[in-house]
Image 1 (tube, one colour):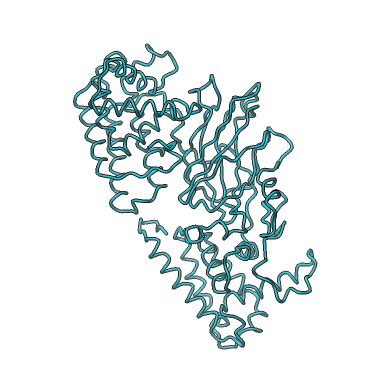
Image 2 (cartoon, rainbow, N blue to C red):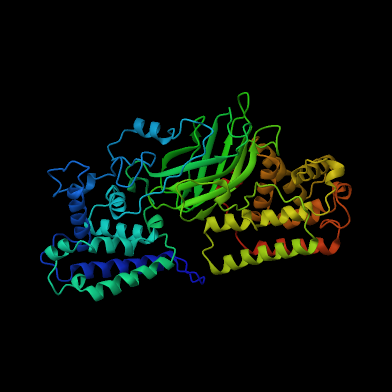
Length: 538
């Protein structure tokens, strides 16, 4: 978890602390019991409460065998309490593969122009209990109880759920003696108040603990995708065949097809961990393939974690930077409402969002680059160096290295005289490669530069010019060669003299030295890139 004042605990420390909390809860729930019903007093109390609630629910038929549930086969009901018809359906482990494939994408609205309606998930004890009961790899009551505690902690609902559980005084009296801790009002209230303070911490203890595909209903975790498009008639829909891939700290998906006209759907996948990036694209087919995507929200339907992936760019040939796919960097958002409006969603700049038209002064760019490098150094020395999601944000986030170097390349660029209105830094980088190829220079740095640019150009024809620049920066930093390329290849090239003013970072000796020193300092760090950033370029 991470406290508001930057106190951090490692995964091992967090697991140790939460295991101690689970043991404490078991001791509290075991105190003063009339008769212990199983190895976990907490889980027995939870299931007894659930059975009574189901009996009292007149909207559902009573199962005559409800007193002896088979926990290994319990699954989420098709429509749990407080859920609407557009909320996900979590099936039991007996669900066939063909049913799974057909349910991965389904239409939620009849009008393709209608924006998605992201219905809030239930925040009830019953819903989270059924989520835990549907986990097929847990075999013991102790295991179920610990999974419930971890899920409730991650959702910041532990105190609320336990207060709901203890609100049934008749059940408490039937199970506990008068002197039991849970029947002492003052002690119980103080205990729940202390648990409420845990909401100040952001835990990922459920997400990080249950990483196997088979843990979740045999078909994986359900993820809901909501795509928000531009309101303009010629931008809101596309004739092309679209797809999306989602990446996180624990893995990434294969391409998930998006049915035409569908803006909200659910797919199942193994636990992806904390989500980091989304890549969305299409094959540019049909009469009107151009598509304007404003932003995408992806939500884990178990933990409720939702992530916003801003885009604000076109997908299609002959428009914008000619890209038919975009890589979007996400951030977690809180309290996703019943209907999302574009104006209400945090607009964090993804690496594919166009740079601001107003050129920044050189001093501001130097400060940006210095702060960015300092953030990378702090992360490397203070945090887990293998936290790939943090590397992605530091490199490709709103104030990441790609954004800073984009400003470095744009400063003093003779854009209006060379390319007219369509300015892309990648055009300059590719022109330098052509110059080096024609000159026949064969030193190691020039060969690396030409090889890297060629690899990027050949890696994906659907990648736009801004995406290629991002790939160039990320791979150059990973290989500890970016500063060499700037000093030995880009700065002395004839293309730089022709395309940059003297005030640029590549022609001003002081500015060039500053950028080179900043980038050279990054050679001290072993930067790890997630697969979604590299296009498998070694």
